[in-house]
Image (cartoon, rainbow, N blue to C red; front, side, top):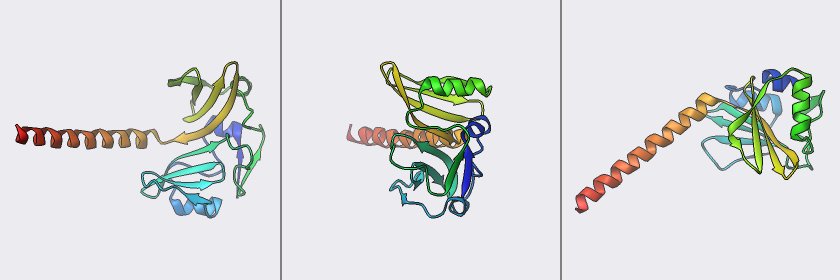
Length: 175
């Protein structure tokens, strides 16, 4: 069982003991057995209600709480104290809480569209909101290992370069 304080998570990325780099066994020790597991292998995603924990090589590389499913609690082994975050939490509510607690966030330039906006906090935590006209609603709050994401992107570039080399070689043989 873990207890999280959303303001503390936004400020320091402390999610009741769940942290990047943890082993899968440690996650299960904190949260119990997952409800389901994704079919993806890279990363493997453990599903705990609205909480998703991504593992690569059995280490946590991200975790996100999604709010679009209004019917479920976060997870039976997660207790929340302090500021209540719900699917109805708007961008304005979020910014007001950040200002009140002196937490600095910037709009993510790669995730700022008419229908959605993302915020990146100094702690490394990200929050994403859906926008529909003047209304907004919280989609998710999470923490991502940026080094992992950059490494996976580089792996994909290398894979594509290898494919291009094979195709070029094949085309040269045909000519």
